[in-house]
Image (cartoon, rainbow, N blue to C red; front, side, top):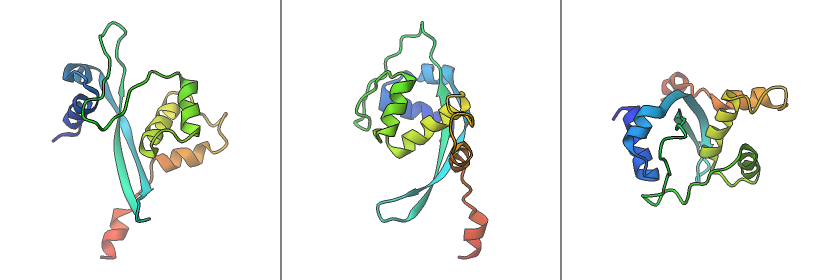
Length: 136
């Protein structure tokens, strides 16, 4: 299944979103790649395709959980999102997408974040597949 069609399917399954809303308004904006430490303490590479979904104000839109994977949807201000991130309320794979959004939209800059370069670099980790494949 193509990546974009997977997005359409997941939006419908997890948020009850009409496929036309996703198809008409979702825009690919990049990828995020990083290592995640799993329950067995192994490093697991993760790659996430990132899309922005700007829905016009005149479009009837209310996301609703539908498949049990999402608890709820809440409309939060930028300050509320940052506060909840600092409290660790978002899952790490969700928080990293939000950080990417903050960087791309100028809400996190090198002028207001001393660790900006480290953060941006970690959003785009290299997995060095060639190196690992040579050792097998």
